[in-house]
Image 1 (tube, one colour):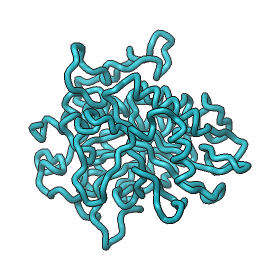
Image 2 (cartoon, one colour):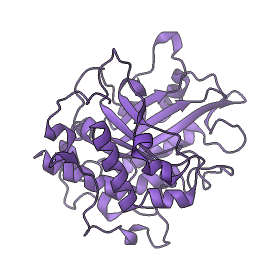
Image 3 (cartoon, one colour):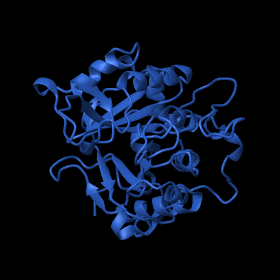
Image 4 (cartoon, one colour):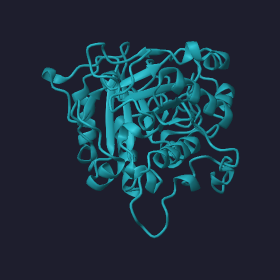
Length: 339
């Protein structure tokens, strides 16, 4: 079993309730079906569960109680291969119907992006050029616009280097960020081994972009850009190659840690649960992202690994209730901790 994250092994740190970790929405909590906007499309308006209270006051990622949680105590709904959507121009094997910008509005606060170099141009693609791409300038511009529109929100960006379509130099991606007014000023720079700040700290200091990278890539002269942190120095991740819902329901297989920090490194701060099937399947995602399936999966993995999930990767974000369940779980955890 993976070692518990640093910070203690008591009930409060793991979110234990009655000897086990339970994650989910109560039976009375129903999906916010009226939050899709006038056109019935997800991401058209901010859903009610992500709206900060009227009248001001401290608020973080849609809830005042989130402000008192450290980053490594938060749970984030993370859009897997977020650049890959039908709406975004991908036309084979896309992971989502709707674009990442709408995912942000809909309450998803984590975006994973595959970084490619196609024809010498840095872009977000899924290991194949010319079958769909998003340009960093556009994605970063829209991300900053979202953060400017909603100054209470913190987002996590996880970049995966394409080994087939490289080479990827992370400093080049940082240059793309630096071209967008205000982007790099909002990047949070964490020091390895330090305690993570609270969400409220990030909002108050306007350091509301957290960046991780993995799967290779290089840093110019061995120096990575400010704020760029290697994901698996900080995260332990479940199996990412589930072919069916049955695979996901097989906790012994699908909750097994497959990537994590080195044995001689500090224990993981974050627990990543992959909740999607490969290849992408909207019907399977509709089930995987449903209230009961997701609650059971997160609870099973949490108890198998003895860590509370922090990042919940999903496909077809517009299906199901992942963002709402994550928001409730964070509020519940803050209450359990007495924050």
